[in-house]
Length: 310
Length: 310
Image (cartoon, rainbow over all chains, first blue to last red; front, top):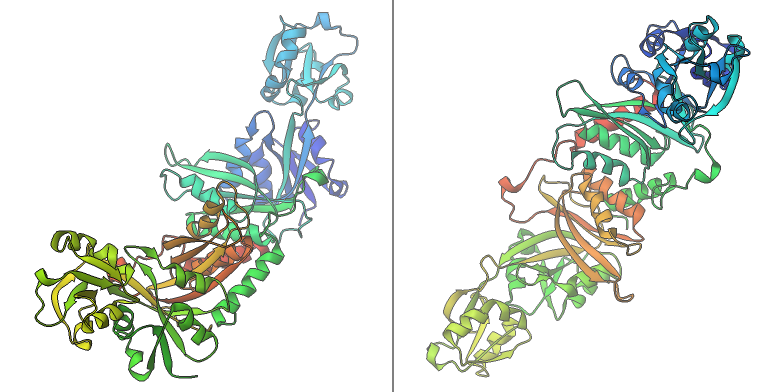
């Protein structure tokens, strides 16, 4: 297997910074790709061991390109997640003053995060979109724009300086990235895990989604993300990307997934993996009656009832 | 094991008539007992192989003496059920005319079923309760009362004649009886079975009962009876006698029972047995996704996901 990780490029973006927080990247070649589909295809066709892509943004929600790519095509599996706080720096050529800035650039996804700052500090500035934040910085280096919003880490790479840092309209703006590979046995549970799955509705009737969510609720499995995506088969046809608390080897999670598998026309398992940056106090004990030990005890009891030994 | 069936006596009551509809009674000694607890104790202490007692009345609801006896004490198991349509005859000594009847008697449970008939036909009559309908017939034979409400079958036994038959205020009034024995492996499923269970609530919060019932609903198990009974531990403390469609060896029923076992402080399995007098058109196929085959397929799928083979 090639020891390379594909990621959503170019170099010098938040994606690369997030990827480099994974210790295993020290021994991998990191290959920037032009798009999320390109990064995932590199895994599907065996060119890369894994791909690293953004999947959820705390300001904008699920990143639909990534979700749609995982939902369709040859199955892939999520192995790791990384959370990165997103704060922008305003990068300029050395010596540029704030009052001299007439044009700024950045990837369009940056705009909702810097809008208020711009209104308060550069109300007259002209905004033009760049292909990526790193590309915006490069264009500033080349003199095409006066300033770019990007990660502070991009300054050195493009010979720029940060006139302002920690720019973010929303407190705690974070992006979640995932490391995606070909299916294999998921890593053992760590005690603070997450399971991702995509489910399709059989038919759309009142309460249809509620019935599916009850498969989790009745077994005490907490949901962490529910993102609907059109299936492409006409208005009103949706599938749902779901992140649930726990690991596929937890009995309560396994039984919930089997319940969905029975009642949904299709279920796609996307992986069980450790939760990123989890505060130990956020790891709750399973609800009463839903621990693995209680599942085993109930199974023993059922066998005794079926045998008439009670 | 003694080849005798205890039943709620005396002889000549609806209970005996219902019991004799079971073919196996041909080879058993049938022993009338003075009460439901006496009949069940005869089973518990090994004097009788089984006991036959009423458990549910379509006019009055669950028969609480029987439910309370099954809920407490040494575990027993239901093996069979019998439904009997309850219609009364007015029994008199031969030659008595309707206009000569001044006093009538019967078991108090008969009263709601004959009340309208009495108002329309014998508005001035004096009612006195008897220990059983059969006992009422005996008292008419002895001349203590002019007439008794009882099953028509009791007339011959007590030298009486039926002045009127088919007396019943409610259409389709039926009583359900059960044959109860010591725990043993339940008979194999017939395809039209019923499972009886008693569950205790852990605590009483809004939605507590709904949560327990969802254990059945989420697995597509239909409920046929839900009867609350106080636990005797103070106002507001209830247990629930539940009859569910299906057999404990059906995967959907087994999983629902295990779910209850996990979340309830106590669950008492009361048996899986063939439904009485079931019309084939009332036997529904399991809801989509809840057949044994679908449970097996989902279990195989989960194993493949856990192995990374997908």
